[in-house]
Length: 263
Image (cartoon, rainbow, N blue to C red; front, side, top):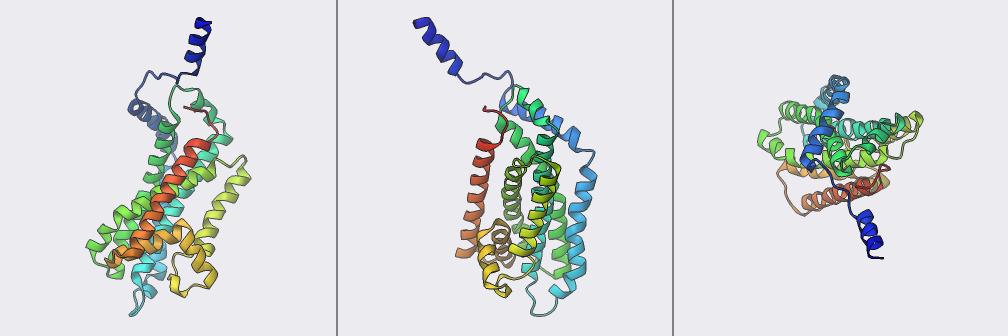
């Protein structure tokens, strides 16, 4: 009986890993990046061209007297994040599932958290070029003080982090190429129609005001706008807290529900 009890306890014990979490992360990052680097130039080019193109086409209208240039720049940054980090996370996780690469990673003696951390970092890398170029070019074109722009960078990174994890969770739902296209287009629909971040919230119809306040892109746009104004009042901290909650909730959901294997 005692021997059986010991055997059962050993079976229930958590698996031991030969590598530390940091070593697992480095190994997985190298594996993921070797697969990602072939498409990296296209992701970077697209993530830069999209927001800079918006600035070029609509920037003159936003820079006119009386216009809210800060809102336009904040919305443009959110667009770059959505089409960088979020779209990357959806496509990457979905393709790992469709091509059964997730099965390969599931056989490795690594923790799921280390695997997800590599996807998270790659998503941030996808968003960073467009985010930085949008802030710098927008600050120059729209006449926004550079110190306000630099102060908005940490908040923009938080928004990118939240939307990366939300995208990873959405990508985990995909089973076919058609579903990848569907969910990727849903990102466009949310940013364009349900939370139109390039339009000031006070000019939206009542329904879109509600969705903008409830969805992460709208919350990020309003918080970044306040940061660009240098206005760190209650509204800013409310949206900052909500973005942190989105980050925490999406992180827990992805770690717990991603169909891979338990740590």
